[in-house]
Amino acid sequence: MSSSRVLICSASRLLTHFRFLLTLRSEEGKYHGLIVFRLSTNNGLSTSDDTETENRSPEWYKQLYVMESTCPHLGAEMTHADIEEYEDSVVAVCPWHRYDFDLKTGKSETGLQTCTYPVHVESDPTDGIDKVYMDAPSDGSNWRVVELRPVSEEFADPPPPPPEAQETSRAPQESDEPVVPFENPPKTLMEWAVLILNTPNPTLKVERTRYAVQAWRTGKITSIGNKSVNTPKPPEVPTREAQYLKNTVDPGKVMKRKNRAVMLHALANIEQWAIDLAWDIMARFGPMHRDLPPAFFSDFTKMALDESKHFTLLCARLSAISPSTPYGTMPVHASLWDSASLTSKSFRARLAIIHLVHEARGLDVNPATIERFRKANDTETVKVMEIIHADEVTHVTAGHRWFVWICEQEMKAKGAVNGGDIVKIFREEVRKYWLGEIKGPFNKEDREKAGLSPEFYEDLRGEMEIERKYGNTNGHEQEASIKDVTQNLARVKIEYES
Image (cartoon, rainbow, N blue to C red):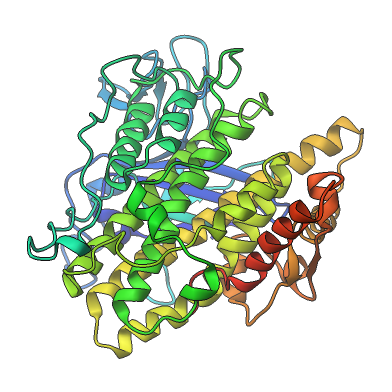
């Protein structure tokens, strides 16, 4: 097998869906977002004991295609492109403006061209398994797959309502508001982001996230809106329902996880904030950095959808094991948003702290959390947590991708790009915007998958200077409140620990 090819996966793995998101990263830290199309519905696999077909590959092997995940016209996602077959070609049609692209050549009748990559299926002589390879991109070396996932995934069913008898323990009611407002419905992705951030009801927040991401992918939303002079501003803190605010306490009072229900409630709380964090980074920094490519918004809308899925799955498990204590009825805290507030002026700092510190720490502690549920014989929650963990690896990957991007953009503006400076810049961001040591043990394998080599995080300590972040404090009361914020950050063990 040529070194100019990239191993995607075993052939059998592609039989579960017809479209997959594929992300590659090179040794130099470059990324490519791609789509794998499997067009044939014939799922037959070759078998070594079938003498008549031993030397003949299944027909669907010839109908595998890989192309860039965004349209070269205006950056629309191609995940939901229509596929049209002609006598001598198969084309993917962009959902925004109907530009068509040949899946083999990448050429369009409009004169544009996208990148496509030849696909090969070969039997691995070491284990006899058919494996799928693609030609490697030419703008990097030692490419590897860092994400391969189906385009479409089902959500868990909404959790059932709590027993009527438990009036004092009932979860927040479903909102009477429609998913799409009757008056002044959002038209751009930025408008949807701000609407979702201002949606206090968690169920409606999830429903609006699903709608907005689907509309973005299918071309119902055709404008990002981050370059408009009328782009709406995100709230300083996302809105929450009255019952949630009533149950919000100091983080020190919810540190100890005594049972599965309390753990699930705490994890669901993280995911509700994570939904907002995904929308906030788009709404807050999209207008600040108007040169952000559409792929950035595709990555973070996917992240918002993932976090919505996680929230729904966790709430369903919470309802299943403890119907009398649905989401919103236990103490919660909002310390994760403290980091968002502290990094609200710096795109680079936001990526570093939220995605490469907080979420990366989740990679470290998730395996132990999964093991706790496994020991409790809670196999359904184990499945949920394994889904969450796999998704979180891709979220840290996205954080790394765009942290590298913004660093390179800033270095280019200064006339020099040095990949070795990326780690130095990251460590400086942590020093300025984090308080305390970045503690192990580290999940080095999954961190490495996401792009974080040990030099990013080993022997790293934040030394945040309170006055620097907030300017000159004119009173002791203000300074004390800021210290409370930083102390809370240090006390919260990135939420996932028991």
